[in-house]
Length: 335
Ligand SMILES: Nc1ncnc2c1ncn2[C@@H]1O[C@H](COP(=O)(O)OP(=O)(O)OP(=O)(O)O)[C@@H](O)[C@H]1O
Ligand SMILES: [Mg+2]
Image (cartoon, rainbow, N blue to C red; front, side, top):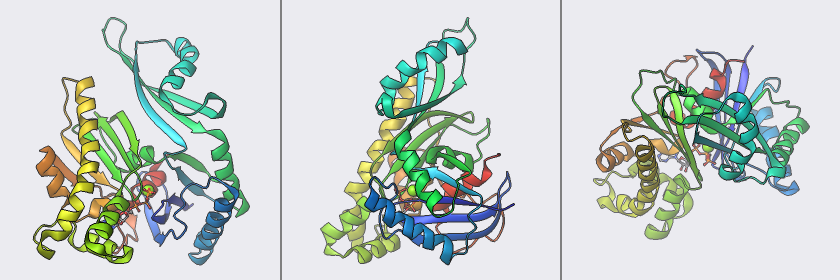
């Protein structure tokens, strides 16, 4: 049975209608500008606005409402990988609440916590154990799910964006250590996967919109023109006398500084390893010149995510492919 994977971004709402599984069979891909700019409603007014938009999104595009998979924004789900001395399952269960307080910025009374052991060393090894913590703001998730219920949708899956993106990339143990930079409009999620295993996650509240704003202010364009210039010229210095590149660079370098910091943090924690590859995902991955720029600055191989590469069916040419990683990852989840 086909499912709908939905990714509500502050820039656009994206859906893939497809038969889920390891090999996704795509029927339709839909992307609509999010005129509300709201990805996560925080009050009744924004709930009403987003609900209306979603209702027509499903209606206009004739998307079925019976198996809808959702990815939650990192603002209500906090994902962390922690390193602690090895504990048994029972010891971990009693220590985890305290660990969460140290690492998850959600007050305990609002927190719903899940965790998973990523790596547990043998007792005789002098190594740390790695645990994935996923903390959720209960009330916000309830409000979010209630909004869907009101338009006839009972979400069949809720997970965090980073997890969906990583699944869409189908890592194997043989893959080189990879940093995934998922750069949307108002957020950037960074994660590092080594030997197929998640090692590091961080989420930033900056993304492609910051690049558009930089063009608006420094060249004096309106937002639609700035969007156009950004997409056409980007970081290509040979275009428009290099003026667009020059205007974008300070903002781009802020994003790059975050990537560099994450690489550094990882290397400090894992001195015997290094990040060998960067994969760009999210809409901003298609910024002209971004691959070259990051390659030059960081000296590692940079690739653009192609979440449809293993899929069958109707894969459209004219959509932003790396922006669809979240939806494709949701569809690849075995349930
Ligand atoms: N060809 C392109 N070149 C450069 N930037 C692009 C291109 N296409 C889209 N973008 C930018 O990508 C961003 C949208 O990406 P995406 O759809 O991943 O964001 P979102 O999910 O809506 O946002 P968020 O997750 O941050 O709330 C916008 O800032 C848009 O300007
Ligand atoms: Mg997004």
